[in-house]
Every structure is written in structure tokens, then in C-alpha cells.
Length: 344
Image (cartoon, rainbow, N blue to C red; front, side, top):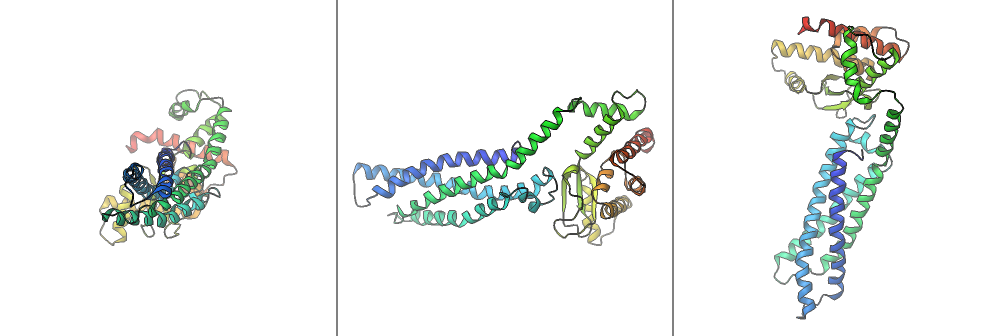
């Protein structure tokens, strides 16, 4: 997760904001200690000028932090579930370690503090005598402390992601072939024209890695109230809609944006075209397989050229272990490659 661009962008934004708030806090302390509204000394004039700068800095930083809360909510609910194993929604993302929910609570509980300062600043700016200066600057210090806490817990929250990345790198370093060669090998081997350039066991590992790393689109066809893109290996064994809890989840290719529209149309009892009816029937069969077989069905359906009919035949077979399972998927993909020109 630490290498993810969403997390990096938020950490960089928070680091810049902390730097600005540190300056604002230091100057705020001077304003609080030395403010004399009836005085006309050079120091008082300097402090009055600094209040404009500090007010603007804090105001923009707080607006950024409020916006970043919504960015954070989008990240944990829509982006990170595709990267974290077993997470299908924000709940699974926030429970990846013990810092997820504390981070969310800090961001939410800080909003009243930010809103209070912004409200006081607005009232202060609207009066010619600035009656709330320097009282409003007492809020800058706790805001700064809250901001630092938010930044630190965000990094702790990301610690589990860093550990997983290190484990994956260590696993990859033990392999005898480069991960960059996997797509090339996978393209060559299934045609049965050339002699396989890797052992059968390694070939199954290639197929397994490619299928489990595939990003697929999941759509709830029970209520048509959710769709999301997830990586196969990060899915839990039991698949449920995070909105309604239904297990009728259809599987589609990542780029298939029409299925969700067709399902919504069906739920509104609108008449489907012949082509849309065929897509709906395939989606229903796919969802039935996921309901009965869970993640195993999604792995089969994520294979190249394997639809609900072929997937149903594979899932009904008695398969003793993972090796036999992925052999069946390899056979199905090879058959699709052999007959692809006919179907296309």
C-alpha cells in the first residue's frame, strides 16, 4: 500500500500541510502572547500583518484536510479493496490492521475542531475590529497536534501494506524465471505448437499467477446496487455484496461497463433486447456459480475464454488438489485457443 499512488499523494499533501501548520503554530503563539489591540507599536503592526498570513494558511490547510477526508473514504471504499487480500469494501480495508478505524475516527472527530476555527475566522474577518483575534489562534495548536496524529497513524496504518510488499518481493526473488517473462511464456505455451520451454509444474505456476492476478468486475445482480473491480487473489472465499449482503454476484471482464446498466434495466422491469437478454442470462449463470462455489468459481471464470457453461463443467468435476484444478483451467484455455477462430 505504501507504494500506491493514492496513499503517496495523501501523505505528501499532509506533510506539506504539517510544515505550514508548524509555521502557523509558532507565529500563533507570538500573537497570543504579545497581542495588544490598543497599541500602535511596530511589533503590534507586525503581528497584525502576520494574522492575515496565518489566517490564510490555516484556512487553506483545513479546507485541504476536509477534502482529504472524502478522498480517504473513496480510497478505502473503492481503491484499496482491490489491493488488500480479502477486502471487498471499506470495512475490510480498515480492519487490515489495528490502525484503520482509529485513523478514520481521528479524521472525523477533527472536523468539528476545523469547523469551529473556520467559523470563528469567518466572523473575525467580517468585523472591522477583528474582535476574535487572538482568541481564534488558540485553536491552531490543537489543530496542529491533531494533524500530526493523523499523519503518524496514516503511516502506521500503511505498515501492514509495506510488510506484504516485502514478502511478495522475497517470494519473487526465489523464482527461477523473471516475472516479466510470464506473459510471453503464457502466450507461447498454450498453442501446443512449440515444445514447452518450462517444466509442467512451472507452467501451472505461471497460469496460477496470471489468473490470480487478474482484475475482474463484480456486479450484484440481486439488487443491482453495487459493482466493483477486484483482483482475484485478494477476494475472500465467500463472496457477498457489501451493500445488501446478497451472494448473487456476477463476474465480468474488467472493461465490461455495460453489464451493470443491463442489470439495472432488468430490475426496473424494462424490456431487454435479444443481445441484452443473452448477457443477462450469462450473468445469472455466472452469479449462480459464485453463489454455490464462491471464490473458486471466480478463479475459473477469470480464465481466458471460460464462460459459465465451461466453468460449470469444470466445477462439477472431482478435483483432488490445486495442481489438478489449474490443469483443468489450462486445458480449457488451450481448447479456447484452438477453437478461437471459429467463435470469433
